Amino acid sequence: MICVTHGIISSYSTERISHALCLPTSRVELHLRSRRRKYVPLAQAIAGGGDALTVDDATYAALELALMARRCGHAVSWFVNGSHVENRIEYFPFQISCMVDDTRAAACRFDGRTWNLKTMMGRRALRSHIKCQYMRMRSQGEIMELVDTVADSLQCDSKHAESSLRTVGTAELAKAVLAGVDLQNHGWGHLNPQGLSEEERTAEVMQNDEYLSQFRRAITPVFAPPFGQCVTRATPEYFVLLANRGLAPSYKEGNVINRGDFLLTASSRSRRDKVSPAEKDTLAA
Ligand SMILES: [Zn+2]
Image (tube, rainbow, N blue to C red):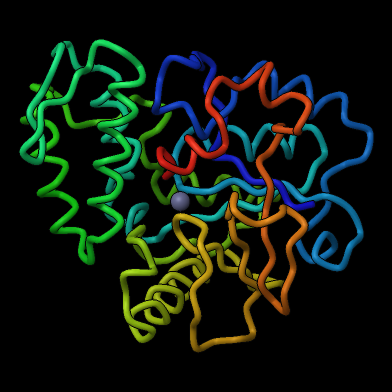
């Protein structure tokens, strides 16, 4: 099995939508310290030789997990977007989630409707609606307009994500590589690849590949599409890792392989995780 998460947060709360894809630092630390079978490099896991640990998006939460895994003797692969790192662009799904979490408004107007923000259910409904909008967007400019609109609607003073969900810089990528983290390709930007043409998708992969080559030489080139759904592209030599909760985590078809949620087994799902996998999809980065 190849596991995926988005990082660790020491102040993790199940009441925050922005934390839904991450895990509490203490729980992960316990797991990584006590797991006797170490997570193996991606190539080995793809060949059926053990489990691999992957983390998506170039945030501090992801960096912290990757470094912790290395300290505990595990292999780990980190999927990052070069344009976000190089230009310190925040990940809009986290920006939006943090605004929805932090707004003091009891209700808001968005997209012609009034949204109740007093309950988690109401906030999650708004968050899913916003996701439907950004999944259709084809440029970072459109995304930034959406972030501005959301901030206005929610009367937020700040559009920044909380500190652990902000984007790292080049120094952090270099530090991770030095610690033995396997840096991998999540696309140049973080737009939904399903909304892009095949040429645009290929350019996203190749541009990021070139960017990442200044930090490391990938032994096994792997691409994890933003939002985790399968897309066709023109460079078949890559392994493609999905994060598709509609498919079994063990799904493998040619060079396309699915991942499963890290530390979210069937038995622990209801007890430990108040957000169902289906809901996670609606909130997902
Ligand atoms: Zn991502």
